Length: 89
View (cartoon, one colour):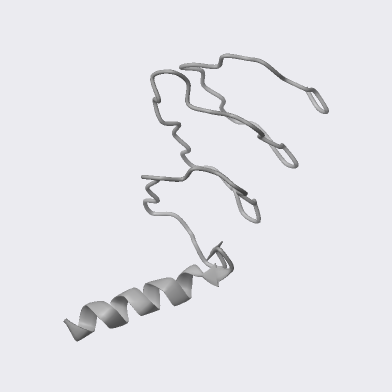
């Protein structure tokens, strides 16, 4: 399905497995009326960009985050600042 445009779809409860998704662009998507969160497991998203996305309540568990930035700030710096503040308490 290289180069395909999928638009105006309802993919509720769908599963996508074992796919090469290099260069894929998700735009103007939402979680539907019931707001059931998506699950990403064992995915290589290295170098991906999330722009103007609602990532509220997103959880990262056992993920590689080296080089990750939030609003231009390296996650390593954010975690170091957090640990420093936590140590001062």
